[in-house]
Structures are given as C-alpha cells and as structure tokens.
Length: 289
Image 1 (cartoon, rainbow, N blue to C red):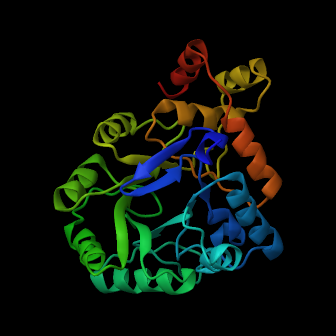
Image 2: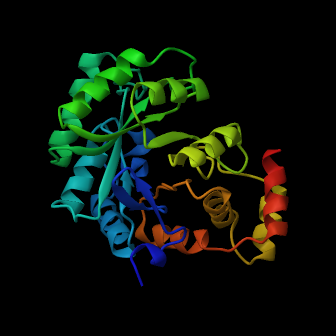
Image 3: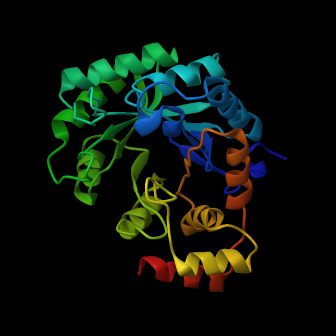
C-alpha cells in the first residue's frame, strides 16, 4: 500500500510536488488566539511526528503564527525533513502586540517574511508560499500585482519553489495567474460557506489545488441539523462528515484541519474516510444552498 492510499483522498500534485490530500494545518500549535508558544510543547511536537507517521506530507504554516512558534515547532519536530514532506507557508501579514493581524505586503516586507520562514524552518528553498491577501475580516477587492510580482522575483532567485494566493477574490486569482503560474488557492470554505463553489470548479479544470481554511468552521464550529442527521445515520460525527464532504467535493480540494492533539488528529483522519452516498451528498449540499 502506498503512503497516499493509506490516507483518505489519496494524493495531489502541486506542480512537481506530490502531497497527501489530507494535510495538517499548524495554526493551533501556537498559544491562545495564535499568540505565544504552545501550551504543551511536547504535545505539539508529538502531533507533528504523528502526522508524518500517518503518511501526511502536506504541512501548512505561517511565520505569523505565534509569531514564529509554529515554524519553530515544525523545525524541531521534523528537521531534517523527509523528501516526501512539503511545507506551505503564507506571507502578507504580521502580528501586533495586541494579537491583531496587520497586513504587510510591501515588497521589502514580503522579502523579510520569506527570509524569516527560511531561517526558522531551515530551508534554502520554500516549497510553496501563498500570498495572503485581504485582511482579518475577509477578502478585499484590490490590485495585487506589486506584491505578487515581488514573490515571483524571489521565486526566480530560487528562494521559493511554487506560489499560491490566499484569502483571494476570483479576480485576484485571475490576476495572479496572468502574471505567473500558481499551484494553490487557499480560501475560507466549508460545507456551510460555499461562496467559492465556482472557483473550486474552475481551479479543478486548471489542475490547481483549492485548500479550504476553517474547514470545520474555525472559531465558530459548524452547526447544522442536516449535518448532524447525516452523521447520526452513518454513525459518525458532524466534523468527520464535514471533512469527508470536502474530500468528495472535488479532487483538487486539499484538507489542512488543525489540532494540537495526536489522538484528535487520528480521529480526523479516520473520520474523513467516511464514504458518502449520492443521497448523503444531496442532503449535505443543501446546507450551503
């Protein structure tokens, strides 16, 4: 059995990199409100190592988480990295003393963030860098060329292997694609928040990954009578069904649910493997309708 067949969803190609569609998001490894070090550092390292043991090869992080504490944990747990492990990170924002998320997308700011990621993760070349757009409240319709071109310059210098965008409008995705190829779009999306349905399908036709952040609702966990009903019928949990729905939504959807507990990670992996019938999917699709 291959590494990827052992995980729900199998694999996907990010350019010349093959990753598990079931990945791991490191945001929850930081302290409360994604500030400060992990409450349980040993537990944080254990969950990262458990992810590798399960066959997960896609790890999502950001220099802004902590800030830097999640990257520090990834390096401590996994470096030197296996050839199969691929880390995607985000730039375009930073943190302030109050825990806010101010934007930082000037070319010199982006270069500093890329350098911080390289240094803390101990990587000469970052596998994938997503340009985080908009702000903490959501997407913002604005030009992105100056910021994205700055990342393209760093890609040409060999500091970055592949590029993507995050928290982006459909128009911003198109703008980025017109400048230089992208391999990923990372936006808020889940069974109840379906505003990017058309974008998911367009990206699938182009062979580009779509990575939903807050796949389980984020700070406001998903609540739905229909979701609970399907979960009860299948003797599963609402969160497992929500993950399974995402994997079956489209083959280009990659999951990065986060947790700070190895046991919870194993539950997420097992739960996402639930097979949903056409009737199940029809019932669930109506939630976001």
